[in-house]
Figure 1 (cartoon, one colour):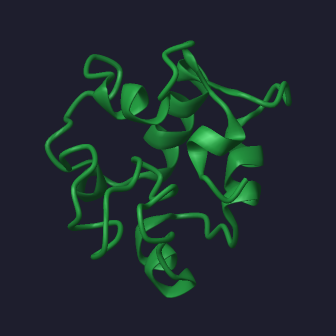
Figure 2: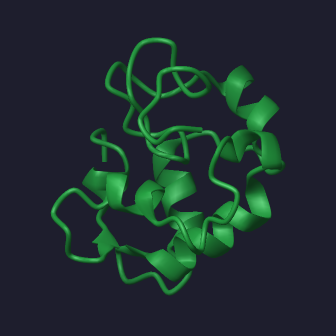
Length: 109
């Protein structure tokens, strides 16, 4: 995956690695089922699963743990080591504060 590509998340615009905050909406429930081992219905539910310490933000470590346990190798695309290539996290962290807010994760939140 090239962070922000239009191929595997949404055919209509850029998305983050968790297929949220797509420029023209998140993927459908059917599409999410194909990608995630554990099906999550909404961006809020997914955010809450990643935010394990419940501080209202997603740290790099929490995002990495979730991505490694929920994304298949195919879904990671060209990012072979998510811990070394932080571009996928930086793409979500639009204000550069080293954490992802609900709105940065998905603009609907």
